[in-house]
Image (cartoon, rainbow, N blue to C red; front, side, top):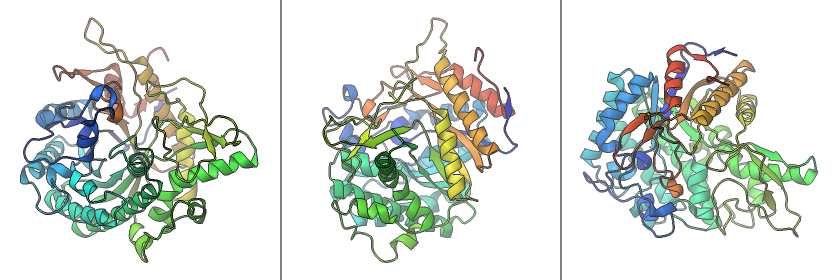
Length: 469
């Protein structure tokens, strides 16, 4: 079946600075928490680091050529805070700002909308040494950083996205420790949630003041949480996880308040005294669009207190849980098929999520800012990458977006993750998400079949099943 998307629907792709740029010590860039984390033995698969990554810092013009040839109407990239302000405070680095200025100008010259994410996890190490996201001062430093980059890039950026997946920064960085900086402090994780939210509000108001013509966004990895049974106990497990995963952000960002049940559930962990009068009003800066990242679903049940705990939440293995205050919830394995990340493939979950947002926040435009899959790609003797499973994944999830739109959801666009194979955080270079393959030895770029298919989609807006589907 062919589905036709409306004229003006945004077709894009996304990347993140530490995952692709490399040039980790060049032109005045300072160290980030991911530099420190990846250089710590045992933290990443094979000891991989982002020192070189996809070498985008030197190959950006080549990569813009691929973006143009793909026919993308927008490109979502992130700005490396330590590249433009090495210590996270004080003077800005002109070489770093110039790099992003060239990138933005290059996109505009090719007719591509620049969508700039201010923060995709690479906190300057100096700020982590001073306390990191659990410290309120980090939010204030972020406000200054936002003012510097918005002033430098001005209204040339079409959309300013304050944060990518603050859930990961808070809970994986400070709860389970499977992401940088690798801390395992439950109360600190919740403080980080608030200060990330506060930083969003502060930076969002900077955008409104300095670049009023630009659109303002934030990107959340919202969880689709389902109960293992129809029991009241399992329904309450869903409620608890939904509060931590989704409403801890949606509440203050969109409604101007943290949900009361979240505060009650976590009262034994923290008293939330880090939330000061006026913070929630500051956080709730009006958005032009909400970015939605989606990959898989989550299945939970109430733990019986006797059987072995199940922690199949898809967020890495650790002796410490990211689910602060929810020690009585089990995360169950789900039926396949799975991606190379071990995540279940469930396109209907994306429709479900979009319709929930449409129902609970009517009138709020939505954008799929990340969706994609890692598979074990193979280069054939003819130099091609026949990534049939990724093709099928993309087709079914984009169709799921269309189904949500048919039911009334105001979805404005779709960004495939990712443009390039890249440094996949703790998984190093073992997991490949790109629609363009990167040979990490030579840095050669090879279009996978999914890239050719996506180019046809961006050209026509017609969603055609992959051959053989």
